[in-house]
Image 1 (tube, rainbow, N blue to C red):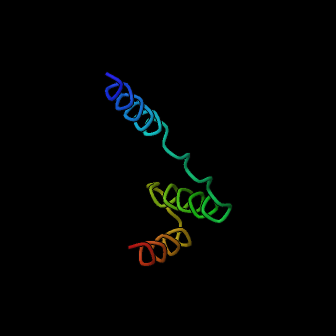
Image 2 (tube, one colour):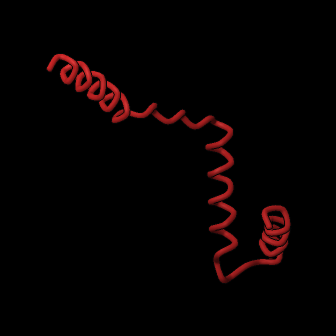
Length: 66
C-alpha cells in the first residue's frame, strides 16, 4: 500500500511539472522590426495599383525573399 502511495506521488509530481512548459522567450527588438518590415512590404506588394517605384521595390523584395 505504501509503495502505491509513493508511486502515485512521484507520478503526480512528474505530471504536474509537465503541465506547465517553460514560457516562450520574448521577441527581440530586431525580430519585431524584421516582422513589421516584412508585413509592410508584403502588404504594399499585394495591392493591385502600383507605381513604377513600387514595382521595382516589389521585384527586389521578391528576389531577396524568393
